[in-house]
Amino acid sequence: MKIRVARLSKSGSETNPDARDGAVQSVERALHIIETLAEDGEGYRLTDLAIRTGLPPSTVHRLLTTLEKRHFVQFDGATSTWRIGAKSYLVGSTFMKRNSFATQALPYLRKLRDQTQETANLAIVDDGALLVLTRVESRELMRSVSRVGGRVSMATSGLGKALLSAYSDAEVFAVIKREGMPRLTSNSIVRAGDLCKSLHDIRQRGYSVDDEEAQIGLRCVSAVVYDGLGEPHAAISVSGKTSRVPDDRLSVLGKAVHEIALELTSAIGGVTPHRA
Image (cartoon, rainbow, N blue to C red; front, side, top):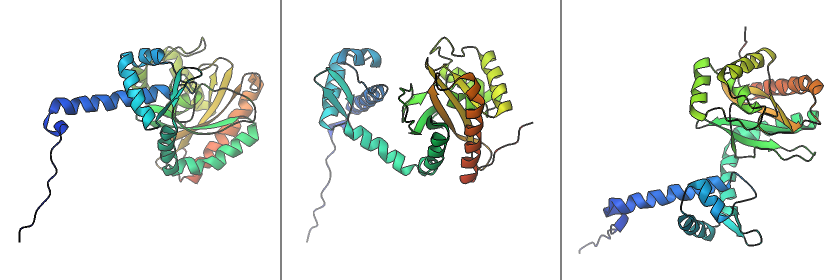
């Protein structure tokens, strides 16, 4: 009796390197579009999206149509804009569910929010960039420049500067070389020497201050959370409008953020290094 073995036929993309490379390029472009749409919750028009991605409008439209069929993006006919779809949120939320640290940190963020009445944020360094992992919103109205799942500049954010203060000089300059020092507002630090001085001050007091450096009208106070080796693991912060965070309140918020960062460090088995 002969046994018939079914064999999978090779597709054209498997036998044709050019076709395979083209498929990879399409995936990269589609992901670039999703990442660009994620930068702004209001969405983008087709022409604006083409400009921001550097892709031809026809290519962007073709990929958007495919992504829309899979619910990764959605089209708002009233405003003629494309936005992130439900499937993208589902994929992102799966990461959050798997990230036990974010879950473990939530009670501490709620405590920080309740103590200060300001929005509490948690960020980690992911693939060399600062990623906002989760947030507990203030009950006050505020539009933040950062969003959960978004990436922000290390040099111009309170969260980023807090983490940089735990880096060596060589590591700080490597970050500057990689991402630059963008001028987001007139208060942004754009000189390496000024940043190093700011980091020295942060090390001395135990918390960082973003004084409208990332967004005009918004202040942020942040401190580092350390891992079991005494290395920077994450940063937490509170952010609020300048009208609610005047100069004489910065030290009060700094103390609150620093103390809860110590508590969270202890909760995850971390060790806060003693600085001279």
